[in-house]
Length: 90
Image 1: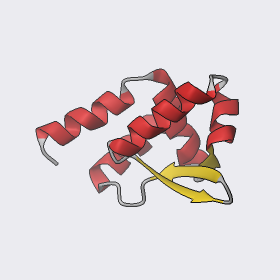
Image 2: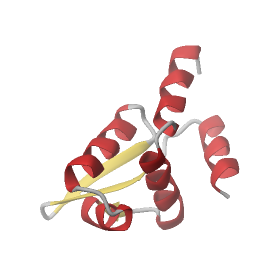
Image 3: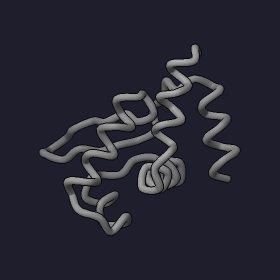
Image 4: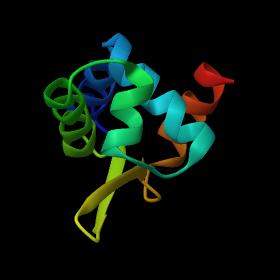
């Protein structure tokens, strides 16, 4: 990874709600937007914004099914980022 990519990743970590989302998905693997919103206790709008931001930088992966969107950690995350997440969250 180059400097720009690392900057994006660390900007993604620089928000308390995004860190909570990463922690949730590290533990639970796959959650819907509604489940994440409920656990965070913030509006649907801000939950969605944080999820989209994390997906844009490649930390999350989304899939839609039956009108619902589910998020998980991106299975294609670089091993270096996976290691940082594991060390930071455990």
